[in-house]
Length: 481
Image 1: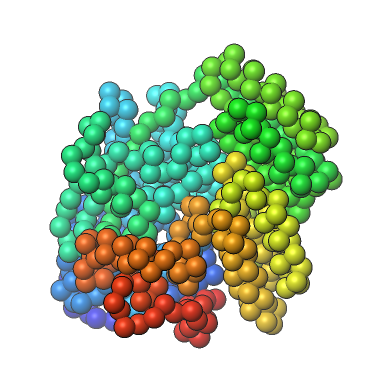
Image 2: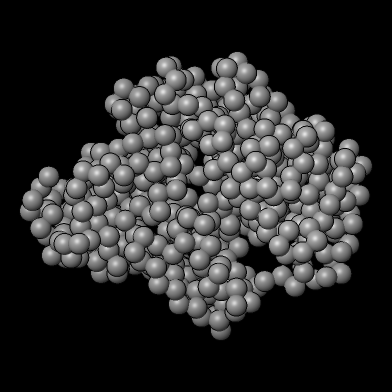
């Protein structure tokens, strides 16, 4: 460890917020993915000025910087490589509400659900609601352009971010976007949201306030066959109803969740679908009736509407704790989040089951069915010899099946390290070159969250070729667990 680097960081922050002990280096060396890294100094700034100081100190010592929020990311985006200065924003939790402009200025360490709880008494909420919203932070939501169940009607994070204060990779401060209706210049705010920490670190974020709907109805439809459930999802949209959310869970995950939470899910169903509609009371009543009619026509055994707010919240608690429930089956899971056209849901779902069977793995499916965002969980015990090879091979086949169906690599979890080797399957060389040039405009020296997202050889004219064996190299280097 570079003692001079640590001393300068301690002087810029305070010694109690600059950590180098081995336990914390291990803990902060990984996120919620199956990857682990090599942590350097771990810093906990409180202010924008302290973030600037961390970056400038790292530059003086020729160290890269890696931003990190709550560590709930699933694609290795916050995994540090080659001992960078790790800038953890979890202590940056200020919230300033501007009701007149219908925005809230928040620091990046604010937990997603805490923001909504803060806004609810004022009649507002923050619409993007990832399943990890009880623990994920706004900085990470910005980095990955996170989604969630209610993004079907309301849109993902980028639709709810007005402006971002950013510390650039050289330590300079800038504001991207603004509170005006049409800020001048290029939409660099839009470019920054979803950049996975590769273009700088967000220190203050202006997010839109979404009014709480006057009426809400949450429906639970259960089906004997997943095929009928998938057909119902498309039929609801085709009937002219765009619910706030449509979530689908297969039998295995439904049974695990019910044993874990007791949400009232029917464990004998082949699949269940959660549908939520909101708006004015008359419209909600009409859409509820239409959704019930469509589901029954598509073979639902029953469709029930949550009787009150307590039952509605319990139904959603089951969905949002689904990933935690798999621990009742096996201690580990590997999760992808590819997106496929809604009309291809059933076909890709059947391929996912076949892939899991071929590799002798358990798979559980829970996903944002309304926008085709799949979340297949490969459930396993990492202590079993050879299991990780089968898990990684199955994961790659799922990605390829999704892309072949006309899908994309990620809906909300990001590319990080995990999906980096597949970028050339979705994007052409000119596409990758354009992305690399944009990144270079923000970070010409490649010091901010290096080696993430774009594969080696992304720039046109590079001597290196796209690395088709990237996953194998990560395994050999010990980055994959």
